[in-house]
Length: 315
Image (cartoon, rainbow, N blue to C red):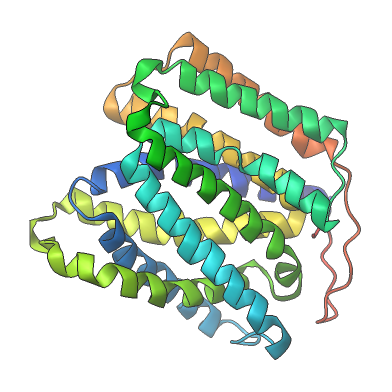
């Protein structure tokens, strides 16, 4: 019964992760009306790095990774917390939130490809069917929104950046799977944030200096806090925890739930009622996620260097 309960907890955590990121698209778009994209990164990332650093400090275990893993962690920090975050924040500023959520939902496809190339996972036909079903659902969700989400030339730069961001996040997921098995999700998330945060702060400091932060509304500052503490700190831990428990590909598929949550948020918060086509797309996404979740057999992980062996799939 214990492994089954842990699987349910992992699923619920990843659904919560999708909700956090789904809401974050609207939050970010609102905040960007008041704060420059690079300045926003410089403000929200120290919040996440500080909170996670405090948690790691309070826990038992190594505060820093082993010397042989430092190079990989530096690379992961650069990919997942510098390059990806720059592509995300600038891309979403240049395109529509719906475009961004659709293009980022291609992450499972890139993750399956990279995981297969790396020999981490061997997706069967059910996983492929599930991934295809979720991507079809994404198309229906976006098409059902009308021409407001058009992939026209005015959004081309942002759209391309979101595709680049999707690939970068897949690299971050696949390359970080083995260290997560050794150190756990919390430490890996914290260490990669420590790598990326000083760089993002340095890049964003000129934009912060140009921005009149005193003119930002209370809602804008709440958005900064939400984006830093929930969409980065908590969400990254949930993501890597999923990788540790159920593997790369099945974790990545949950990102396809993000536009569903984004639609619900827009309906309740902004009064935008989803169309019938969008509801059909949402159903396709949910079915696709379930097929992928149960279709991939468990993978026997290698014992970690610390002597601990994860009880479920670890890549």
